[in-house]
Image (cartoon, rainbow, N blue to C red; front, side, top):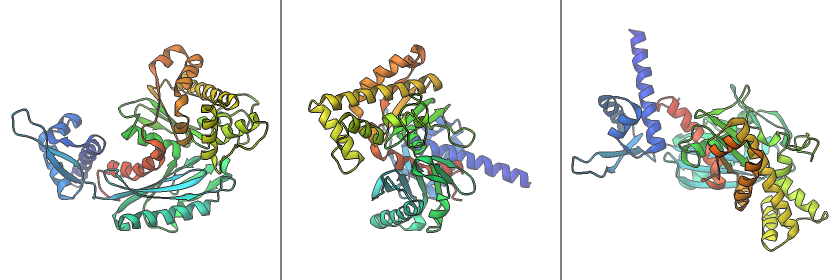
Length: 400
């Protein structure tokens, strides 16, 4: 009898999770849409939907268009059921954002970091301050927050507590989850920032509908998330996707990780600016931070500077070669370029495609599209906010 009860409960949770996932990713939908997309019976869908409406998880969203028969009622995720915090721990700033359960941005806060010295305790303090700030600005109680997702640079080792390894930041086995947990009781979910960007684009952006894709994050540094068969490929210890530290030029420019010739040493924002400074004979690049300095390069190129144009052309070629490596290795349907630097350099996309076509094998190249991300510079934080949602859906819509 106990086994039967356990089995019935597990089936019920699985059905709840399936329906909620469809509504979360593709809603609003009718009950009949849910029957078709999940393969569940009409009575099962009706029973589960009734429970979800009663619990406040799902809401009716008006009648669907009718061709003459009785109109069906549309269903959607209830936006005010819970709230989510997404955090982007970049190399120059910490951005904290609050979303409702329909992933609508409600408030945000930003805290600058010194890229030359990123202290874990300072990052944890900014995250905690940001959680309070965005919740307060939106009038949201901590008890109504489902969880906090955090996207960070480097390798994130998952376990009882997430530990971050980020050579470029000088972080070695940093217990970031414990540092943040010391100041909040909210559930924490930490992952690599490229992987959170990839999840956001898979759920809501340029990766939607793809089964095999690579999401490249180009900011101060460079990373990637590889999606194979609809699931993120993590490798033996979750470090898969460190694309920025694949070798582009053997014995080439010194990378922040300590190796030479890494892709990041050529196409990361810091490296692009450094190459421009060298091309200018060592003269400083105008601008107070990396974003303004990269913009100065782009403006100079547009104004007719041959030096700036050459640096951008080289950057497109280097980035195209890196994309070709991704295509040859993973045979994706799509390669999506995201991150603030990739967005700033968006006009280079045709040249990147051309360079990738020269370097990649013809057959896999012709099967892949290369495009910019659709969610903009906030994709890392948005993807981070989906981490507690993914856990919630996997648990059948039941809070742990």
